[in-house]
Image (cartoon, rainbow, N blue to C red; front, side):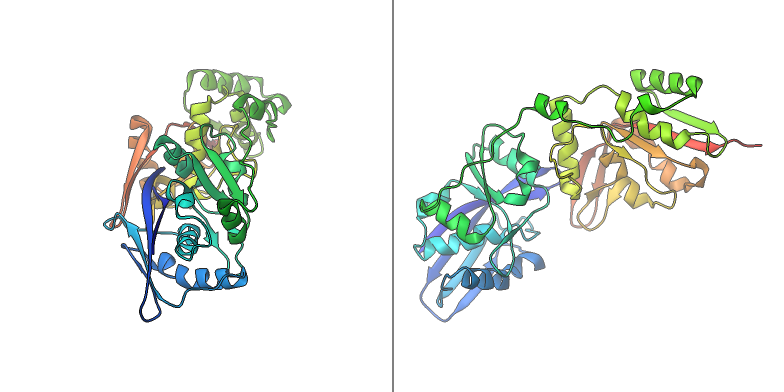
Length: 352
């Protein structure tokens, strides 16, 4: 018995379509995952076995082969747990083969069969929609993150059984109700608002002009004069992000695993890395070429407090991304390009 379903893997801030093929045949009991899967994907075998048994399903005792195609793309993260489990259930005739063939499913399984949230849900769902997928099954904890995506039905599920019963028609689940961007903007509340800053008329005027013209700023003054407070309030006087800007900003934070509970970012980001931040944490990198602080500050403010304390190589690394508006992070196993258009605000104490 052969079944197929779809899943998506992250590549930068884009999603790559992965076909999950499951073949159940006679022979000695074997559960093998092939298709250039990393350790997290291979370990899904034990998670899926425990999840299915704790959900009341019998795990097949025959030869079970899972293929993740295309085979030349490295598969990472535990988000393949759910589509693999659904493919196995389809081979066992617990759900219909045609019910999973044209949908995408993503989610990490706990040993008790519940679903844990995944990283990068927003870019994955957008990629699925752009490629014509009509239905995506996601963990319920990721629902707020994708509430703004129109043109695709997002089914929030909490357990493997909920997903199986929805696909079999026993207990259909209503898709996530989309919310307009204008409604999200109306519910926005700034924690640091420029209108609450008292005094400092000259500095406030300079920051207002810089915000209007998209200029970078260096504030020099005595300790305790309010430089950091005013810098934190700068996002509140910047123009509202357009829907497209909010989407791309949220996609970056979704890949980095720092999306707020409300989902879509409606406030321009404010990033303030410590002066001991490394070159990699500022520009981006690591094993999987993750975004750095300059990309997390895209469409917002990057604040460098106590500018002279930052290492020279860190400051030099900002030059090219600020000129180009993007940064390409290259590592042995991955290469990703992230946008990095931000307003640079720096502060330092007055030199006596």
